[in-house]
Length: 318
Length: 261
Image 1 (spheres, chains in turn blue, cyan):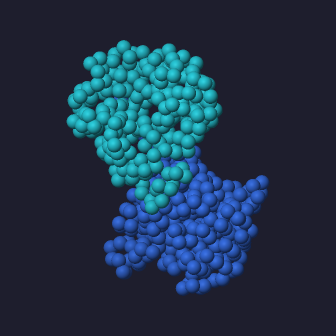
Image 2: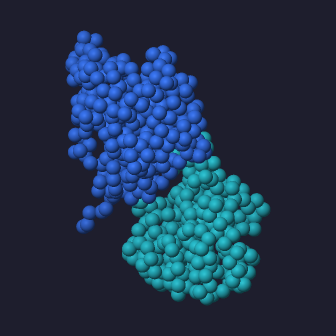
Image 3: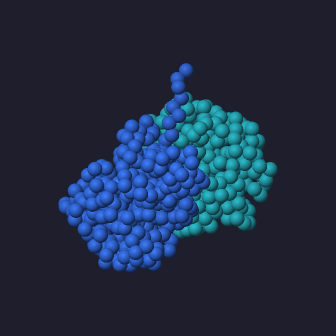
């Protein structure tokens, strides 16, 4: 008896989004990065096309993040300079692109001015020629001033700008249309709001083919479970032909990993959990591995070991 | 939901006249209106206006000159279909065959050859079925034969045959019962379609009856319908039913989003 063909036949296709613009395209990047374009679930090459592999964006922030010293030391002293950190991410850690988070702009951190933030973007673009993702501080009010200046400073570079939410999407659409950038649409672990934000972006005249979805990220327990499920469900909807869900997806794995106690506490606080030096990057890499399976196209990572393990996983699975 | 626009049909006076006078405008008008209303297929029916294959081909070409929505050829004569198929730019949906052996043997090869799809009515030599069991039996015949000719489940649309509520009320539960069983034939399942307006023929509250019935059919697995795609409340009801069945993902703006899609 012949073995029945149980392959899934999807009718939809995930949008292809290209980040970065070379000289010919009006920017100054040395290369561009394209994600998406799949006609099947992650790594199921036998079922459909996977024209672009998942990519790793190296985490960079304008102010060093509040992470344990062992993690920061593993990255190196370059963590104190966004430009040098970005360079190290590309040259030594072999990341595909850079994800810059302007945490220093947060009024509760350093309250850096929009001009200071734009300067960081400019300096980084001058020295590093990889495509760039730019995030605000997370403080909506402040970001409404910070992101327009940063967007302008990167005009024509086809950056990916984060993030558009229900509360601020008009500003993000306006700057990204004016300065020719791509948009990250964000929802708080809520697939319905995720879809609604995409509808709002479309209503505001922004093309959904230029959008990457962000369902925030979690690095532990139920949070991880929820985000994983949403990424997977959104991907299946996109493959079934729901054009409002057919976007590539991004996860901030490093940013979230080093917020959970289990990945930041030393062994003396968590007896039996092993050395943080090893546990931190392991935690980061395992999260990344999970999200790869769920349908994440861009993973933001920081620890060199986590980056290396994830690169190897992608190479093996693709 | 696969929406098949019913309006380009010589049963309507403007279309009948258009065919007789070879006036493309009414056909173009309805091709545009129904496409704007998000029809997946446009049913094209020559009715009693003509029996010439070239007239059917002309109607299809008029539609295709106006929009790129795929055609549902509403004709079951092999000679007519052969001609009509040739002019279709996209694989059409043939409407329809019955579960009569001779009919299936004549139509399925044409459908397979053009990689098209076909609606199968669950009636046989003895006419329209009156029970759920008979409907399922005829649907199984259609399914088996279609597979024999190499059609995939997604190329077969089974129609349970809708009877009017006002004179054959006892048929409604039989239809719903049958529909729930069609989708068990295969995985992925066949499509399930109906000519919706039959349910309200001769009744007073036609639109309400149509809307209520399609909701119940969708709950049983129906995923296609020949209907008035310009009936906004009907389309909103269908979109909502699909959400409630968790077939699509909810967002506050789902109605507006569909209209803009």
